[in-house]
Length: 571
Image (tube, rainbow, N blue to C red):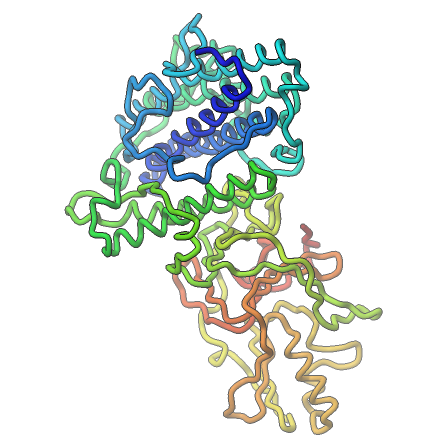
């Protein structure tokens, strides 16, 4: 029945969030089943739609917040059990979780199907998503006419996700909703990206996120491009179909994911279920970040974008994991994980995983703090001053390319700028590389040049450590050398009291420091023997202190080499 009350309007906007999300797991299954080195055009299309569905969730949440509602994502029934009908639809077709295939694309075309000419708004049992949104628009207009805009738009403006404070890297725009005009603009953005301008054109009014020189077509027509293996070009219409350049669609270059994956298909204590749980924990972590971003913490949206790259890693692992039948692979299940189960999940421990050409993924609730160099009036680094602790969560993604608009967090920019994160740091251990300085008295000073990032703690305006070592018979000088070494963030310098004794290391907490060197933003300073796993699988020595590049320009990745100072890197 038509929307006639504020309560009904809020209920339908909550449904809108659930409808938009219900399309994401099917799109992700198709996307991540494709072999990494194939079907570039196809992967770009599906990824762009997925990113825009996240935008649609955000816009629907903004409208719901504006009319005094509360978006609910962190609840057990938020994700349907696939195969499933679209929430509150007319149940004309079921949506399964499938690998990339003609069958999957046909389902996507049904999901994004434009409403027919002259189709009436439908608030429940809708034929098309466009008709559902038309009913919300009609309800908004009716309530504003009968109650007045001020009685309808009573929400807290601080709960709005805004484009000026939140980076969004896809096509379209985040619209903060304050009144009827902006609410209708937000809803039209959703409809046009799905169905096209004025519901009559293939174009959606935006530019292609991967090829900004191109105009973008609506979701339905993007999937039609995949089905036909051909792009739309200027002059094309819904009736003509795509007549532009052709591209290759390799339907066989996919992992043979079992349809509609479920953990129920495997023994509860099996390694497969453990891997599925890992994925589901990460996915629900992302959903909870979205829940927070829609409920007064809009900055969490950028953190959620970074978590999406962790989701990709876990999903691809499942796409490659044999299901046990000798033919299919497992695939992700998108099953509910309670907050208590997420907090008790110990599969990862405290570690940092470097993603190939992507961010640092941090596991295990590692504290993230700001640390600034204290510099003398002569420009000498003296010590470190601890600053604020940043809200990050149990798992988060930190920018490695240096170009995120939400530093230190990843916002996905690396994928759009083709960041080359190739790791070149020496894989030998410090003991294999280090040199020992002769002439120390009651101290053995060592240096591993491969770790140096030229922080400047190894000297003052008069002398440096190699010179001071020769004067360590004086205990005051010896203490000064020890202090210099202990303040070195990379651990390039180390010392012991005897040639064969263990190094003396300062007691550092397990945390990641986001460093600042005067006007220049410094590296990530990892302390407390937190494991770092390289993306290329090469060994990486676990150390009490490590400095990781975050400007994206180091020639010693993933380690910092001081290039951030040369380029004047800033946040």
